[in-house]
Image 1: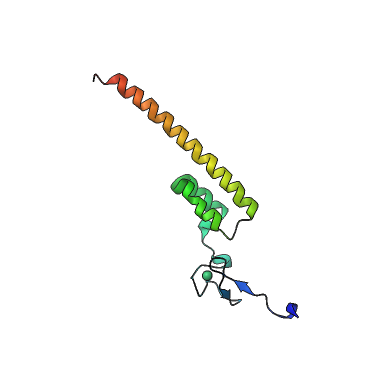
Image 2: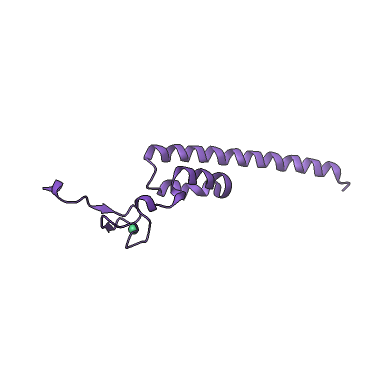
Length: 107
Ligand SMILES: [Zn+2]
C-alpha cells in the first residue's frame, strides 16, 4: 500500500522528483525546504517590494513555494496598492516641482 512507501517529493520549481535527503533540485538547482531562497519568504518579499523592485516583486510572490494562495492574493493586492500610492505621490511631486520651476524661471 501507499503508506508503506516514503513520500514522493517533487521540486517546487520544476516538478522533478527529489530524494528525501536532497537540499537542492538535481534538475534545476533550486533550494528545497530550508534552502528555499530568502526572497520567496514574507520578509524578503516586503523588503524587495519597498526597497528595490516595486511591483516586479510580484514575480517572487506568484512563484513562491512558501506562501499560500490566500497570502499570494493579499500580497498581490497590497503591492498593487503600494505601487499606485508611489506613482500618485511621484506625480504630485513632479507637478509641484514643475510649478515651482515655471514660476521661478523668467522664460
Ligand atoms: Zn527543480
